[in-house]
Image (tube, rainbow, N blue to C red; front, side):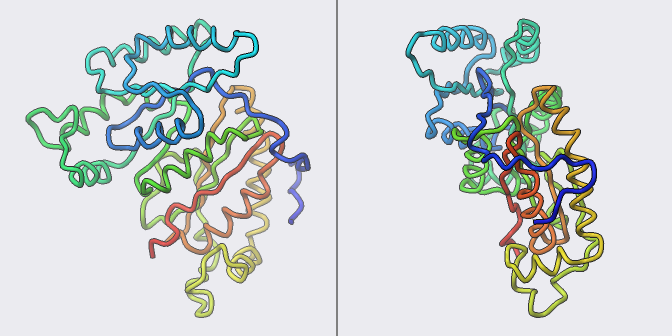
Length: 311
């Protein structure tokens, strides 16, 4: 494995499983209708979470209080709690931001996870199940989506984690959520390293985006065209190119102070996206390498190859 670049502390050899992630008292799942809230809630429930669906925001303080009492019960092992809060609450949903603010000032802010998708993906999903959007009324399906997006704009910008589900099927989303909130996770930050193809759009949930199109494309090498960045021959080709090693060292150097800052600010989830033309060769190889090198006692990484297999 390549040695870390200048200014990057050596990786802690301690296995990620040995220093547990502090889970939030309550996780709030929210976001756009059709973006996968139910799937995410089901995944958490299957992993032993206690999930409350369609909870009115006004009841979040009571849920926090009950959960706190459960945690203080001697000998108890309270389940982690998640609440699904969305526009099905209609008028009372408007108080959500104010309630989160009150809880934050009281020192009990839940972690807010916002599931999102492009308008095109949401329209396609609603049309496939032949159901109207909750805010559609007498208008078009897209009218309801745009109304909801406007209603949730501030909430999205304040969320702790945004999950873009546009290019994910149910199984891929389940895997991603499961990896993010894995009960055995041992780190202060969960870092998703995602490969993608620019031809399919930049991920909505990326905190950092890197463009691998400065490297030669293995697609134009006949013996590599049908392989992917997960194959050793392609990875060797990509990572041996001029600039590849310097790029990896640079990302590690950049992420060192970022991780320190995120830990200090209590941010638990980060998405680093690596793109190439089709998301098959260069971005995949680099994402695999970054995930390996960024993992440490404080950072638990997992890989999402968003567009692998689409070509």
